Image (tube, rainbow, N blue to C red):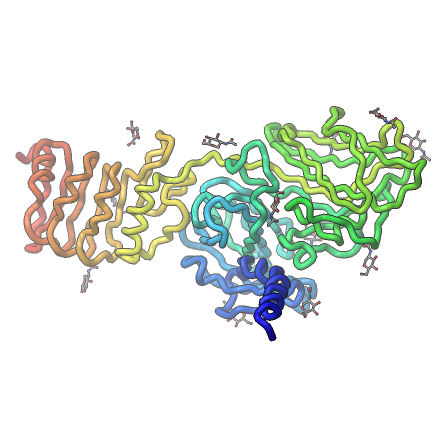
Length: 505
Ligand SMILES: *[C@@H]1O[C@H](CO)[C@@H](O)[C@H](O)[C@H]1NC(C)=O
Ligand SMILES: *[C@@H]1O[C@H](CO)[C@@H](O)[C@H](O)[C@H]1NC(C)=O
Ligand SMILES: *[C@@H]1O[C@H](CO)[C@@H](O)[C@H](O)[C@H]1NC(C)=O
Ligand SMILES: *[C@@H]1O[C@H](CO)[C@@H](O)[C@H](O)[C@H]1NC(C)=O
Ligand SMILES: *[C@@H]1O[C@H](CO)[C@@H](O)[C@H](O)[C@H]1NC(C)=O
Ligand SMILES: *[C@@H]1O[C@H](CO)[C@@H](O)[C@H](O)[C@H]1NC(C)=O
Ligand SMILES: *[C@@H]1O[C@H](CO)[C@@H](O)[C@H](O)[C@H]1NC(C)=O
Ligand SMILES: *[C@@H]1O[C@H](CO)[C@@H](O)[C@H](O)[C@H]1NC(C)=O
Ligand SMILES: *[C@@H]1O[C@H](CO)[C@@H](O)[C@H](O)[C@H]1NC(C)=O
Ligand SMILES: *[C@@H]1O[C@H](CO)[C@@H](O)[C@H](O)[C@H]1NC(C)=O
Ligand SMILES: *[C@@H]1O[C@H](CO)[C@@H](O)[C@H](O)[C@H]1NC(C)=O
Ligand SMILES: *[C@@H]1O[C@H](CO)[C@@H](O)[C@H](O)[C@H]1NC(C)=O
């Protein structure tokens, strides 16, 4: 075989493996599963256990009455779960292959299945990094709740966090990440917003829900056909690859038209929040071959006002229309109607509706994050320290207090009393430059009281009591304590406690 022929063969092989490569970038986690990979026969997607993505929580199985074969439609990843009885914030850390700035679909699934034998449906909050994503509530114990969001990676990693609101123990059954084309699903907010899935409908189809591998991004499409609509479809190929949305053939090949050709196709939904903002992505392709004297022209309006210019679906060619300004309000009605001089009724092939989630919360200052992460690894801290140290507000790590009055939260108090710390006092602590209170009492810390603690200019309280520290208190700290600027508690190795107060000159 000549080199050229070999090269050609190689190129053909790599071209045909593009499909497989996309799948490798998928992250598919069966939360709470025993430690081995498996392929879900329903989807051919390989699920991994969750131990590489989280270090807190407890593995649990749903109770047998909700298991296979009692529940033959139970998706495999939903038979077990991870619950979080400890800590008010627990997070999975995902590393998208495309890194910082990449757009990713993230889908979290929850099935209670009375795993704890309490028959009590919990309610908790789901966060993407430091921003609110959704409330998780259940209608019943066999209800599979699925939350999906499109989010930009704000750093190398994406944290998916479950927050305990005091309404039951949070848990999660499955977590999936799929890389998307970051030039798509753009909004006026750019990378400053995520899109929470509201509806994704394959219109006119009646053939089960579709997802991977028909959909390269593994978007899940639900069938929808109104009783007032008729289904139309084609078996001819449809050109779809001119944009990055990659609508699956199975989805675009079916459409619906109103049974009464004079009536519009209508989509309507309500929300309780009058500030809710939506983006709609509508997919069209003409699936019927039109005669010369036929035409299909659509007028599309939102709450009575035109949303797009008059639109003519192209024959066997997928087009996508989406609003450039968000649709704001409680009540939403989209009408797709036949234009006056159109001979044929309107059609719609598929639609996606998303609610905007603006990124309003700021993560902790990166300087503080680096320092506290260093403290965490140095002392192998066993607390539930997950996700962002300070944010969201009121869900800071155990033992931490933060100042939120500034645009970027800062750590102002670190309390590691009785936390089994050993070794010397870590230099990274002095990098927590806004620290006002530091409590390292009742541990096994050894070595001197380091001079670098002097760098903590805002420090007002320092408790080092109950350790095996040796030597003297550095001069600058002693001076500040003498001047009444610092409350210092310190035991020498000899066990005699010395407390310096402003009046102990
Ligand atoms: C899974 O893979 C097998 C073997 O390649 C194939 O026969 C089957 O149709 C696939 N199932 C799905 C849901 O894609
Ligand atoms: C869950 O079920 C699996 C398989 O039946 C079993 O191996 C595992 O030990 C169970 N896990 C728990 C936490 O009960
Ligand atoms: C549980 O809730 C789901 C979704 O709300 C519903 O479809 C299902 O019928 C309910 N099952 C039972 C047993 O009530
Ligand atoms: C995103 O937020 C940044 C910082 O607040 C701002 O400078 C930028 O203009 C925003 N981008 C968009 C598209 O709103
Ligand atoms: C449903 O699937 C069957 C078998 O794949 C196919 O023949 C039929 O056309 C499909 N119907 C629709 C509406 O897509
Ligand atoms: C991503 O989308 C852009 C714009 O829609 C398109 O030009 C590009 O080819 C897409 N990239 C991939 C890998 O699909
Ligand atoms: C079709 O809709 C039009 C407009 O709403 C209405 O006037 C007409 O009576 C309807 N036709 C039938 C057969 O229902
Ligand atoms: C939305 O709210 C309006 C006014 O309250 C009501 O007439 C309409 O039926 C509601 N639509 C839906 C889909 O709930
Ligand atoms: C159809 O109507 C639209 C708007 O009413 C107009 O812009 C267009 O030129 C008309 N087309 C024909 C072929 O009359
Ligand atoms: C928070 O930071 C602001 C600005 O630096 C400061 O004025 C305020 O005193 C701080 N609050 C606390 C509780 O440290
Ligand atoms: C640290 O936490 C312990 C126990 O939770 C508490 O007794 C102590 O007062 C705290 N230290 C500071 C400086 O707040
Ligand atoms: C300190 O370490 C010693 C031995 O390594 C151990 O016996 C003791 O319980 C530890 N004390 C604390 C407070 O952790």
